[in-house]
Figure 1: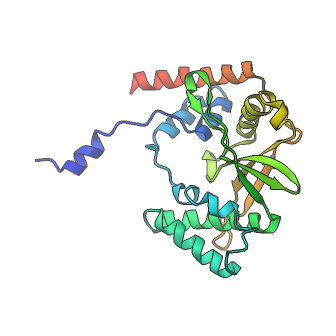
Figure 2: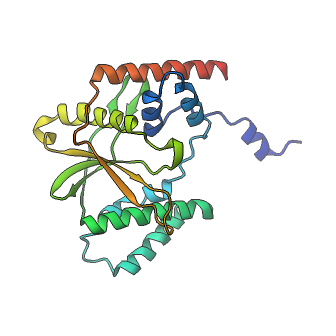
Figure 3: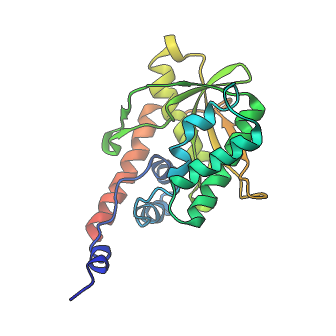
Length: 236
């Protein structure tokens, strides 16, 4: 009789829902590479390697100005412990801790203030309901920003064009749709370097000077992705 666990793995269906990051990468990939980008995304099985740091974002983003927190060394130990408890396996723990350390350093150095950003998801046609932002408004150097986090490394991290795609969606569906509230709010994408002494340094990309795509252009890129995805699903 077959091992139930083995059988379960062999019959597991692929997760064909692209994450926001994968959607941005596929939408901005050259036409001849788009299918390979999509296949790499759906082949990952949908496992969230960075759930440890994501579940602790509230504490990390509010760390700089919380007077009840202990000294920096104690804070770091607390962060590492909380990250570890949300991860599976030593590799995942170390990966999430290195991101958390980089985020902690940036938040502490910039004295970032975070507030809740309870903005509803948006409908993007075939891509469905999406959130291309984290649920926070941050004050950085006196200006308010809505962030998007990209924790990945290597070829699956956001490219410049993919960042522009995300900025364009944010600009269209937040700033232009709600000019009274968000006309003066900026957008920032946080990415992280390769590990340096067990820390992945945070690199911010702001939307200053970005030439935004319009809603029609965004829709056309998304439609192209889902045409290719439909072909991939049919051939599977």
